[in-house]
Amino acid sequence: SQQGEEDPQALSIQEGENATMNCSYKTSINNLQWYRQNSGRGLVHLILIRSNEREKHSGRLRVTLDTSKKSSSLLITASRAADTASYFCATPLPTGANNLFFGTGTRLTVIP
Amino acid sequence: NAGVTQTPKFQVLKTGQSMTLQCAQDMNHEYMSWYRQDPGMGLRLIHYSVGAGITDQGEVPNGYNVSRSTTEDFPLRLLSAAPSQTSVYFCASSYYQGGGYGYTFGSGTRLTVV
Image (cartoon, rainbow over all chains, first blue to last red):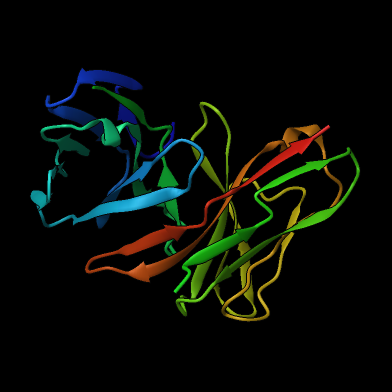
């Protein structure tokens, strides 16, 4: 199977709750990235975490990386309706040249 | 600073027709790539380029050609459109961001082949 798959496939929460999405990957990586895609739009880069980092924050986003388990999680705190989107993790492809593999994403719905 | 610009936003083609999807970036990024996004399959890499004059194949290159004559432009050509090429196409350029290369995406081209 492929590098980088998100879990769950879909998540529905109430506004104000926290949302957690997970990503698992297969091979060694030097970084992992998370992107957001609003319906009908392109992907937007959220955060990059390097392999020597365990946790990184950006506003209401918290990303963790566990290289021993080959997994990462994205936590969105105090969610808002505007956070409704699909979230993708991306990992470098073995081909190098900055190529990234994107999973199928987690579809997050935040109910007002 | 417009970022990555894709045209057209929507296109309907008949089977066998050819067309070019345009992609331009104004950030002087060396790396550019094309992905297609299909329901339930994530994004798949079609072709990529690490600089002007250099292109290479990705995961799903068949039926597509690319060229990179300038740093700014990276057009994707469909040689003879097939219904299997119905998809949303995204162009991206890449920049170094402290530990790795992050992508800036265009807004996509939704292509339907009938």
